[in-house]
Amino acid sequence: MALTYTEVAQVAETEPEASEGKMLLQSWLNKSMKVEMTDGRTLIGMFLCTDRDRNVILGSCEEYLQPPGNEGKKEEPRILGLAMIPGHHIVSIHIDDDSKNVAEL
View (cartoon, rainbow, N blue to C red):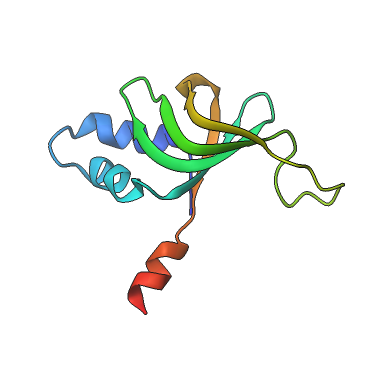
């Protein structure tokens, strides 16, 4: 599932009371999230929270200088742990929906 972070944040801001955007963000809690940043780095970790300024907190975060799965040589990730990503540096976010498939079985 790939959405631009701006699209989700705009929906959440326009309907403050139990909006679709708010419910979507809540459904992402504790799921694996991949964040692509303006400087080309990719961060992968567990989505913990966000705020009005579109900052994102990831737990158990790993940093990749090249996108994972790139055809070039294998890159070892840098372990960051808990990371705060400023909203203005976020290009895109991706959520790993594999946990839904496991729950349905």
